[in-house]
Image (cartoon, rainbow, N blue to C red; front, side):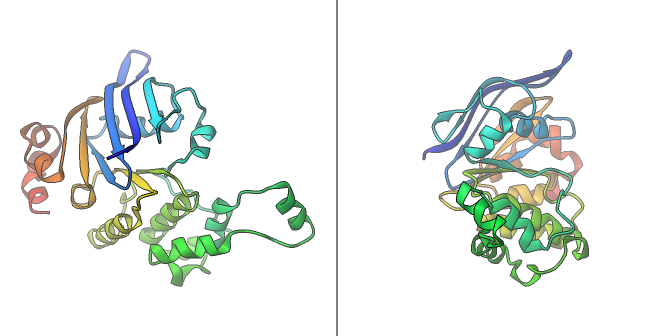
Length: 253
């Protein structure tokens, strides 16, 4: 299977602290790959590194193209999108308008039309993504009026509106209850297509192990295990490093 992302030997240091050490992670096209690990393991740092927000050593290949030297906005334009742990929505715009802003790719001619009062935003694209995530019924609502679970999904929808080849999700289930997390997982799984793959970072073990095709485990900035979710659940190193006393519930998830 062709890989949309090949991150090889990714290393990040902050002063004398080695946040990531020679991390190799691959995301095949059309797949959802999970990245887990205890607090401080380097999960968010990895997303920051491959998306261009922190300097790193190593090689980053996206869709067969070396983007290691590209800046963050150049990586985004090549199809690498991400969400953030804090939900940054435009609360003065409706849910649909939040997506329209993301799908809008201005040209000289479209700018002229807008100046003349003829808006050409891709509302159809936004509507399709909202429908895909079962959010069509809240399209005209304001984000500030939504519960946390739906606000999280709107953030994911806005990232998907950029039509990314790879979407990196940083703790999308943070602050959600069990039922909200399960609903999020189902919708993320449904949003994976041959053209859009995902890298999911989250502390919710049931979510990550329940929806991922493949899982990597970080500890102290190094990959200590990787494999299918069932294999990761049973890996002694993972149980010791991450699951601890939560191993039994996670195995039944």
